[in-house]
Image (cartoon, one colour):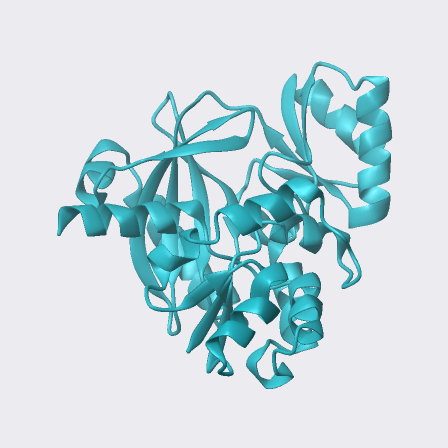
Length: 284
């Protein structure tokens, strides 16, 4: 029996970086309510939030043969161990640390030539002298959190946020503001890694809103994605797959001028994967 754990609080847990962290109630409630999302990806498995694992294992009266998480971090590992899941079925601490380091936004800077790693107020102010509009991103953040839009100059709140983020997460990533007309992702699954397909989704102020159920052929015909996809896959082959085998989503921004830029890489399952599988089920 496969046990699939839906932990949408994963990004928050990675940012904290410690096992003893209590995520907000809203994230816990979302995990309990929507754990069936994992069922789309793993039909036949037992899918639940981490907080329901002990109850579900007791009801099944059998130990799991494998454990799959939405995303692996120190918190979900600690909570699963506490609920009786054997350590042999979970990633070791070195693997957890590797996932966290890969998720740090500085990892993908080789694929983002216009972005900058910022360590001080002075560095950010020099960038603003060169270009007026930037987005400052916390290196560990997700779901629209940890983003600040800067226009011309740093406000007092911006300055305080930058200093606190650098102290906690080593740096801030500065990305030029772009005229984005579409958000598309490259989705990779399983071990060995395979390209699952594309997903097309909508955001608002950096926050995921919904997926649009377009087939891969339509997405590929609508946006110039292949050059960036080839570049990303060369980098993954050299820098990532030797260190990490698991689900991975690459978010891309398609701009009004036709250019395509990498936004971020998520070393976990994604809503795009769920949407892609649902599209496949609908087409059968």
